[in-house]
Amino acid sequence: MEPENQTHVSEFILLGLSEDTEVQPLLFGLFLVMYLVTFFGNLLIVLAIFSDSHLHTPMYFFLSNLSFTDMCFISNTIPKMLLNIQTKSKIITYENCVTQMYFFILFVEVDNFLLAVMAYDRFVAICHPLHYTVIMNPQFCGLLLLASWLLSALVSLFQVLMVLQLSFCTELEIPHFFCELDQVVQLACSDTFLNDLVTYFATGILGGIPLTGILLSYSKIISSILRVSSIGGKCKAFSTCGSHLSVVSLFYGTGLGVYLSSAATQNSRASAIASVTYTVVTPMLNPFIYSLRNRDIKHALKKLFS
Image 1 (cartoon, rainbow, N blue to C red):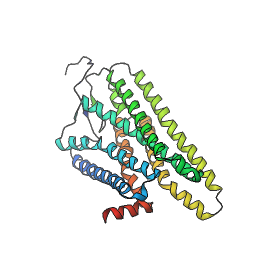
Image 2: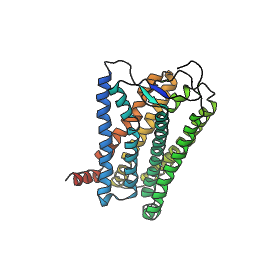
Image 3: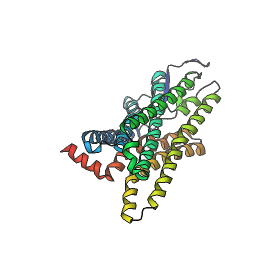
Image 4: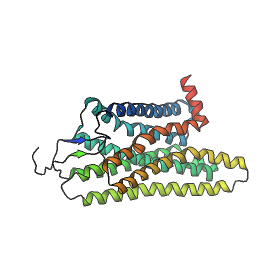
């Protein structure tokens, strides 16, 4: 490759989590197991909900979509990483890199919106139980889901189109195991101020609004639960929110942790290792959180296997 800047490149190099050849078989085995557990765990949640008519409610409708999104989310990055380890190749084509970026942003945003929608669903169920079936009707639930996907697709498309305008140099090594937006932008030779501005704006608005909605919903929920006189009523109300609160804490906690750690260390490889928590660990734990603490899901899974 010639030393001058290029407006178009044919491929990038994914450096992965480690360049130590002795560690590669361990990484392959570990991530293969995590991928299979995540994919089939979320698949079982989806199948259990669709096979049991008792679970055809708004709460489980959004949960099945969250599980489906997590399946797509992890399938966007881990198979390519496993293929690169197996073939001892670190190359990803420019087109595949852009595609990976698009779907990564898409699924993260959909997860973000779905968690907010699920919080609103719990708010209506606990604070307005008599009007729950009227408010959370099938048409409204479908509209919320459609809006989540459309907004996420538009944001993802816009950010990727911004990347397509950049010029790249000969330094095309990405210190990550997938094409992460910030890492790719940092490789550009052209001015990235507008890209950074769009990224901060999208993160602040599309990350902040759903999180604010979740916090407002749960502030109303907690206020409503505290007015319940019986201990049993309070426990029952809290139990319906426990799994969702755990997933929300895991999603935003790991994402914020990765952001803060990368900002503090300025070490791209350390940031890549930290990002495993929200790209792999969080989707893997979600099915366990919802199944272990939910009698309806347990019952549906037993019926599915029987």
